[in-house]
Image (tube, rainbow, N blue to C red):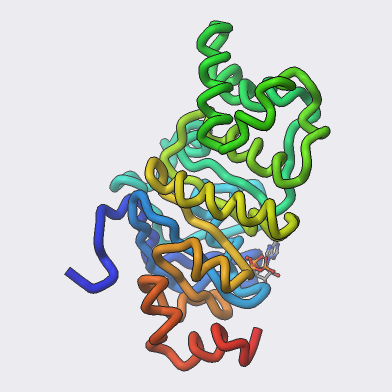
Length: 257
Ligand SMILES: Nc1ncnc2c1ncn2[C@@H]1O[C@H](COP(=O)(O)OP(=O)(O)OP(=O)(O)O)[C@@H](O)[C@H]1O
């Protein structure tokens, strides 16, 4: 077994190329992601990290002119197969964005939104889901007395944990995070990083970050992207201490990017 492979891999990208019209943004990406671990995607601006992340739940389908070659499998199922149920895929592969984006409704309704969309009407069940999702997102104690107040009244850090709770409410298996703390202050950032360590016990987490300390602190594996390619992938502890590639070393020591 290769050094880097320690557990069950749930997501496999093979020979993935992506084009925006005539511009190729991803070049032959081959990456697999370990269940119940955090993997960080790092690299300079514009190198394709977000584009790649969006491939994993087919968010790029929404962008006109995108062409994808190669394949992505989750549990051996090709997610680009014509018969893939995209609603189901996005339920299984949740996404958290850079700016917290709670819906303009109450805290309770933000969490209940997904389960309701999927047909759940039972009030008692919804109450349970709201509580357990907010517990898992480490927000319950802060909001349990004001569940029926607007979500927009929460601080930025609380809003981001609310959004994470909203993702958890539909019971995903994989959580994608695109720079989830870049709009947050250091204390809120620390609480989201702490939460990552809890989340990975139950979920597979893939996070794009510009913050090298965050990748080093919070992830088990790291993939270094440059100009649409993966230059190096490996255990975070190894990649940050003894990178195999000169370009990785230059990036993590701040020589470029
Ligand atoms: N919707 C789009 N249409 C056309 N080109 C795009 C689109 N989104 C991204 N690109 C291009 O694809 C390349 C990769 O961009 P991407 O946003 O994936 O990089 P990134 O590494 O996530 O950057 P950042 O760290 O700044 O978010 C860039 O050249 C970008 O201009």
